[in-house]
Amino acid sequence: MKDLVQDYVCSKGAYINPAMEIFDFHTTGRGFIAKTSINRGQMVLEVPQTAVITPNWIYHNAISCVSNIVVLENDFKIDAFDLVILWLIHEKQKGMQSSVRDYITSMPSQCTLPHHYRPRHMKLFPKQFRQKVDTQKSDLLARYEYLDKCYRRHGRGIAFAEFQWAATMVLTRSIQAKGLKLCCELIDAPWFKSAESASEIGLCPFFDLLNHSSENNCEWDFNPVTGSVWVEAIGDIKNSDQLLIDYDQGCDDYMLINYGFCLPPGENPKTALELSWSEIRAVIEANVTSDIRQVQQIFNRTKIDTENAEERLVFKIFHDRIPFKFSYIFEEIFNSASFEEKGILFHKRLSDERLADEDFQALYLEHLQRVILLKCLESRCAELDELNQAFDHAKLTMDATRLYQVGQILKNHSAIAFKWRNELTAETDRLKIELEVFQLAKNLDNCEIDNSEIENEITA
Image (tube, rainbow, N blue to C red):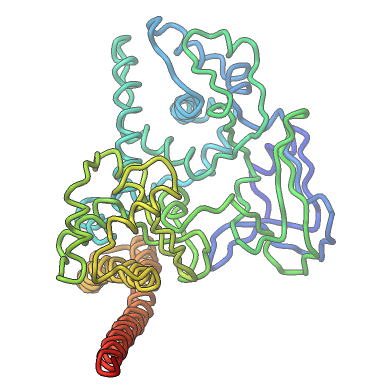
């Protein structure tokens, strides 16, 4: 199968390995398939600088788009992300007059990322996920309002639907052009924010058909010297295998928010339930018993900037592990200078007649950590139970894409939450028994000491 985008990049001098072609896959959609075997180390694809759409390319090739920007106010400032969005909007409006019309028309017309969801479907996602989507929506809305306001001063606004489409294309299809050096004209342009790291962005026609896998058989890179994007086989690729790259994989929340898909439960090592500082604090405050009253008293005496702590502190529970580094939670509570001081301070403040033994304190704190986490997980499990029920009732009102996206995130969060709730329940029960045995042994030791004193007095 050949398409117009392939013709476009070939006309710019792209190399396309003849052993691969475009194919419609049932699970991943359009991508590349090996017609014949491809050996490890073989070049698969190279798209030259003339076809890679970077800020430099836009400045030198999209004259009418840049001209519209230059005439705006002196205080008008945009970054590379905004520039690529404005370029996409401009080229789409030009229609058949656009020199990259084949590439523009190859892009999806429908936007399926979560920030396009209506509230009735968005509320089916877990709170952790919704907060991340809200952050992205706020950023995009702020960008749109700023661009639209500046353009309206010159009698032409930007339609929100056009902005949404263009922003979605940049989010889902852009590459990180690591090492890209901006041209002098852009660096000197008063309207351009020329921070290097933020400017390492681009669109690469034809290359963006490659699909993602954490078990990729190809790797890619941007060559900052030549300005080209290349793809090479890192393993032997058999006939009929799909060619796959790694999108620089983030957690499943990140992948779904930015690319519209994620991996099945347990497959992404970066995926985690994220417990915020306020969530942990609420659990401590709401679940005080006589066993942790002194901890609560210490907690009440501390002065913590909860709002700032919320930004700094996120405790992650992964599918395969819980990194028990609760020390930094106690760091927030006791606000001392170093980890060692905080650890010592905690033990000193926790010490009393009942908890004077250091071994008992260590066991007690190990148990307490798990109790706090377990309470947090019970709350998450309750939330997920409710959401799964609501999702079952809403399925008839959802299209296939939303069914997949909502269902996958609920499965991934549930897999972690229910697994660790069960395991921590067993651990807390075990540690509770150890604490009781420890205390019983201490009581017996004390009885033996008392008896020996009585025997000594009688002998005397």
